[in-house]
Every structure is written in C-alpha cells, then in structure tokens.
Image (tube, rainbow, N blue to C red; front, side, top):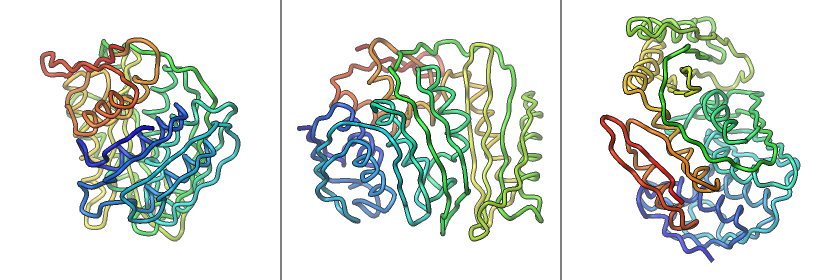
Length: 344
C-alpha cells in the first residue's frame, strides 16, 4: 500500500489527485493523510472530492473517507475498464483540474473513455482555463501518444459554475519525449471568450489588448473572438494564448476575467505572461511543466524538457513520482532555464 503524507512539499490538492491517479494506474491501494494541510481550508473541497469519486468510477475503486473536509483517505483500485463516466461538481470547482486527475487514468483504460462533467467551472482562479487544456496540454500529450479531445458544452465561472464539458480519451502506450530545442517562432494564436458579455465587447477588448502587447514585442498574433451564449446564468470571460515554433514546441499562457478587472487588463496579463515565456525560450511553459511530470514518470525511458521557473508544483510532482514510482529525476540550471530530466 502506498502511504502518502499530503502535507509534504506544496501540500496542495495536486498531491491528492496525482496520488490517486498513480494508485489507479498501478492498481496499488493508497492511504493518504494530511490532505491539503497547507491550505487555508484543509481537507477535501467539492472539486477534490469529485476528482476522487471520478477516479474511483474509472477504476472501480473502493474508497473510505471520501467526504467534504476529510484529511484522510483510503483508495483501493481495481481494473480500469473505460466507457462512459458522469461527474457533477455542483460548484464553480475547476473542471480542468478534475480532468488533470482523470486523464492519466483514462490513458490506461481497457476501452475508450468518455468523461462528461456538469455543473463546474471551466475558467476559475488557481487553475488552467479549459482552452489552455484544449490548445496546449492535449496537443503536447498527442506527441506522447495520447489521443484526447475536449468539447465545451457550457462555459462556467465563479461563483455559480454551471459549466459542462466532455473529455474523450483513447487508451495509449505513453512514449518518452525529448523537448530540447526551442527553435524559431512560427505563429501565435489564441481564443478570447466571453459569456453573455458581448454587449460590452469583452472578448474583443481582451483580444485587442493582448495583440497590442504581442505586436509591440514583435510577436504578431491571431486571436479568435468568441461571444459565447452557452450559460445564461453565469457571465464571465477568459483568454488563452499559445505560440508554436518550427521544432513543434508549444508555449501557452492564459488569464481570467474577474469583477473589478478591465477586459484590457485580462488581455495584457495573458500577453505579458506569454512574452515572458517566449523571451526565455523554454521548450515547456511554467504551467505545462508540472502537468507533464506524471507522464514523464509513467513513460518507459528518458524524457527531458526546459522550463523557465521551478515552481512548487513541479517540485511536489517530482517528489511524488519518485516516492510512488521510484522514478529518478534530475534538475539542472542551464543559463536562464531549468533542465528537467527523468532518468529512469
């Protein structure tokens, strides 16, 4: 049985989600304590609970301690069959975060998986936007052998959520990767979304502000403007950007609309973040970096990438993969970048 202390490293929900995923994939029972101990409200919140319950559905697991506020959990997995899975968050809890927990498990299913999630947030604070997953994470995972697709039925934002999204995944054998050359920039694209805010031209203003910053930094861009009307009960907006180079490197950034924040500041924030990434010339952006760690650990063979920062999530995910899978990682500072390699 895996024994994991959830207060280690970042002490965040990421440790819980990835621990459950590895437990499911290896079919080894998990006992995790001190769940989210370092957070202001420790224990399972609604989105973490639904991630655990969804993982349990995927691998027919028996779970003890799966209740709101719980800081201890026993997870005993069985076979990952696949098929159609339904999940309901009931708050503005992040659907992308739930997908980050479920996706590695889906890859190891016997049959294709269709995971439908309702009543959650597609674009929320402290989480990637749904379009970042669509246009940055999934195309990157495709290079590793993963065929997956995200379809948005309804966008959802804080505080009501009410978003609805479907993830489809085909079983795959993960391939190692060597992302070592940034290359030369080919194009910058993006999608600017607003839901029931077209009268204020929110999506267009976000896009225009981002393109102004990108052009000023010699990174001309094309950003799709999407005036969404899928969710009349929850207004909101987001902007996702991604840049591609001639070595097939994909670098992303995103930003979220909030009350009291102008549309222009949303566009400027996303563009400034992308500019910081592109100026550093990594092969993986800061946020994609921690998402790739479990796939590096699970794939047979050596994998490597360069990123501009060493975040607490990267360090926590490496610690967890070394603890649970006996993987060996190395981290080396090379000029202004961090070279992260999974050796074995």
